[in-house]
Structure formats: C-alpha cells, structure tokens
Amino acid sequence: MRKVILFLFALVISYNTSYCQSNTKTGKGKQDSLSVAGQKLHRQYFLREKAKLQGEWYDLHTSEVFFGFVGDSIYYFRHKEWYKYSISNDTMSIYYPDGIFKWRYRVQGDTLIDVDVRDIYVRYRRNR
Picture 1 (tube, rainbow, N blue to C red):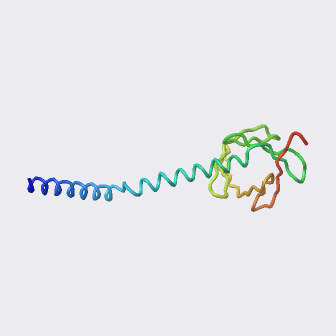
Picture 2: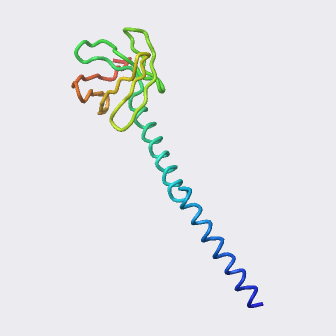
C-alpha cells in the first residue's frame, strides 16, 4: 500500500512539474491571465473615456456646433461626414479615408480641450 501511495505521489509531482514547464515554455499561465486582465482594463478605460465624449460639441470661438460623438464614430456637422475613432491614453485616433489623424485631448466636465493647439470645445446642450 505504501508503495502505491508513493508511486501516485511521484506521478502527481512529475505531472505538475511537466505542466508548469510546458506553460513556461509556451508563454501561457501567468502571462495569459495578465494579458486578459490588461485587455479588460483597457476596454473599461476606453468605454469610460468614450462615454465622456458622447454628444455634440461646439467651438468656443465661433459658437458653431463643430462635431459630435455617437458610439465609436465622430460626425462633422460642416462636412456632414462620419468617421471612426479610437482612444489610447490621452490620444484619439480618427480614421479618415486618406490617413489617421492623432489628437491629444482632455475632457474636464463639459469642456473638451485640444492639448496641443489649445482649442476649446464645449458640450452643446439643447435646453439652453
């Protein structure tokens, strides 16, 4: 009986050791769980930032409604055109047919600030 228990114990130890080594070699295990967690955090950040942008924004200097965000698209009122956008950290990438425009921005309440050019846009409220 003692030999059977020792054999089973040795079998379990060797299986766990080979499993851990194969996961280390293939890059699975901790790295997979960390990348999934990182993807979830990035997705949560994107959804939170995207929610801040939704709605129509007007140019503070011209008082003209300039653009609006709906879902993952931006609409330019003057040109009557829709374009996709994405967010990474403080940078928005807008996908135009002729290329990608990267724009550093910051949202403070109902104010959208172009960090580089210092243009200021204010959220348009229809009940003003």
